[in-house]
Length: 129
Image 1 (cartoon, rainbow, N blue to C red):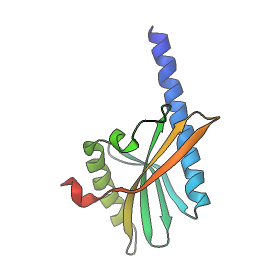
Image 2: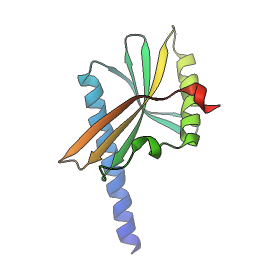
Image 3: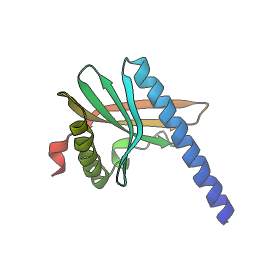
Image 4: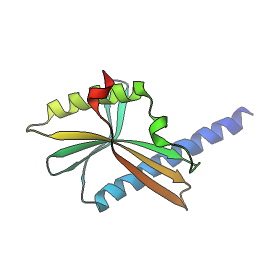
């Protein structure tokens, strides 16, 4: 039983990594420049950070097998708060003035047959506190 659970965890992890790769390709296709992948501040990780013009986009990727799950619901308010704090730290390290937003990218299905949905401006930092 434990081996089966371990196999599922490994498969989910691998699908999550592949989903991040697919989402990165989608942002590049839309003209964004990738700045960071899996950027960490303490225990908080931001999956992808991209830029277009003077806007920084911080992306949380959710890989799902079920096409009917709402990706916004998968990002808890606690996770959003941590992302806001990490984003503030990241933006402060940059030189210059930047706007930023938070996107949630959902990659659902399988590696062979998937759908990417990007929820732009999925939440705003002012709503967190």
